[in-house]
Length: 228
Image 1 (tube, rainbow, N blue to C red):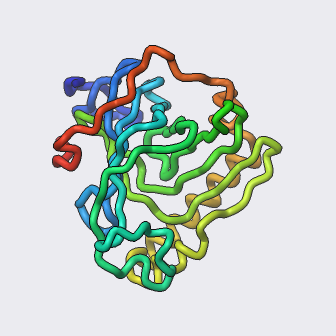
Image 2 (cartoon, helix red, strand yellow):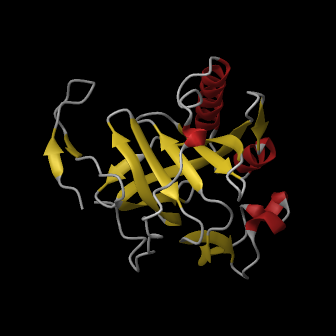
């Protein structure tokens, strides 16, 4: 694992911060439940690039991940939206399916950008996941999902996703009005970046491919340990 080092941040502070991970290192990309400190999503990933202005990681097909389901095992998407966020939940282990996902995040930004491909590596789309800015710790990064998302196609057309879930989360008290307004503003900022075709959209990440020598990361038994 990386060690804490003293570096000067962009704001001029010298607070301890973790050294960068090397390409090929395996870390955890986690999400807390909304309004809680409990981790309910954990995805082991491989570091592609870790620099002051960008963290890029690869979620490989077949990776064993933690995901939330209803207490009776029902997948969340099968539950009507009106009760999806109020029924008791548990967490299960499930392998990531599909062609894998490349996740890109810039420090301090309230969203990350995910790239999706078809199994034959035809590029499908970018996905802007609105979330709390990533918080780094010794074994990975933590965040909290904000429900609202944006899809971006190769022809640069974009559209909002999950606006119904965003509204339901507010109705159920998971998104206070002040937070919901901040998330909507973050989404509008992301849209401006899309329209201007700023990084990472213009950076040709869709041509990237994982190192064939990389092994699928293991899900550790203490995947939900407190961030240190």
